[in-house]
Amino acid sequence: MVMLWIGNLIAISIRVGEHIGARRVTRARQAAFLGFAFAMLLGIFFGTVIFFTRHEIVYMYTSDASTREAAGRLMSVLAVLVFCDACNNASGGIMNGLGLQRGAAMFQLVGYWGIGIPTAVVSVFFFTQQYPILWLWGSVALAMASSCTLQMIHLARHDWASSVEEAALRLRKDVETRVSTRQPSPNSELDTKSVVPPSSSSGTNKYDEIVTAAGERLLSF
Image (cartoon, rainbow, N blue to C red):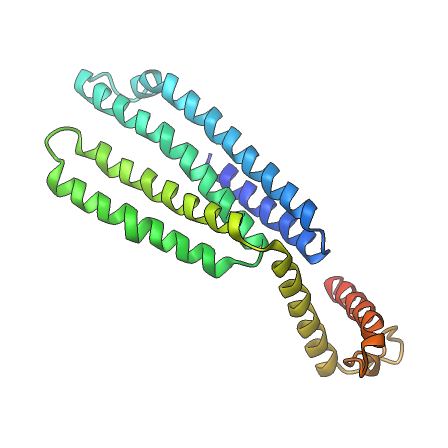
């Protein structure tokens, strides 16, 4: 199941990043929405399967009544954790596609180390009367839910158009750096001398076309 979340994360990141790089903000939002909705459906499906088959799954591994009872309760928590994990990975994929990797890492740090782990530590020492493992795994689910919530709040307030401009700026700098350090080839279709900032605003569009063409050529290398 985990590989499904990771695969969906990568797919969301690629699709959102592709649309952002192509200046298609609306399409990027649609890709993000569909990816997150798909993650929710996956989480609901597998969480439901785990919840309603928890006793049968446990029975395959043990016939001890007390162990089956405790494991059955733990599987209920696992069903919630699966949903939180799927959504957390999807929100991280959207953040990566927008070029907000640092923000995604910070929200994961807050979710796990700021909320999840402290809750787990407190539960281990103060809620050990009955089924302490439930509190421990519940803290993991809380960490995932917290980081996902923080990321979604940030995405709702984020200016997606600014990510488009940042992506264009990074591409332009990368192209200029590579072209300036690359030895010109006699058969090269791209004249390195032509990739220079325009001296007037009238040349801006032509310059953007040159940089875009250079970027497409670089992606094919």
